[in-house]
Image (cartoon, rainbow, N blue to C red; front, top):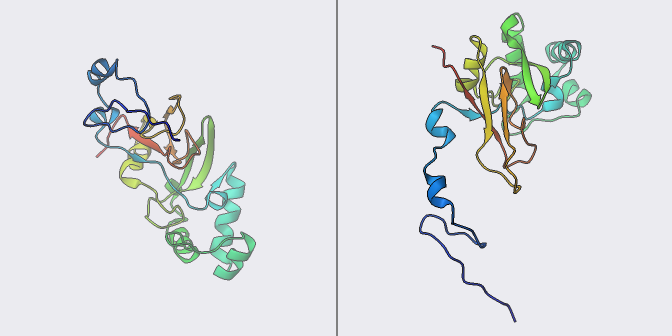
Length: 191
């Protein structure tokens, strides 16, 4: 026989587990991060981290050279990769060819907490970096800035998903669990 327990629910929160609502009134007096920061987005999503994000510039430059000189087939073989829906070798090659002379395309990226790496970032959607989130990340590139990194959904009981960055950031900066995507809210918005 299954033992059922009647749950105390509120109209907005139909929980499937027992919840303690004793401090809800105090909690509701607060405000959400997204009420303070109106301009935020998920972090950069490369789709191919091993190809696009590197510990040093020499490794990044080697990949960029290969993408410039090798055929698409040879790139796929050498880097053990293939096209996906949003990331394609041909578009990556074109993005590199069009922007390789732009020194601003060489950027540092916060990959994990206290782990800054190198990438080739042009801001082009479906380019070398698949989802650059340029509408927000541009504010980290245009001048001195800092941004708050936070998760909007967590999958563990303890909340510990917050960080500060002064660089563009990868979406798994504060957690590598898929649904705990890191969002960036820049302090300053540049025109």
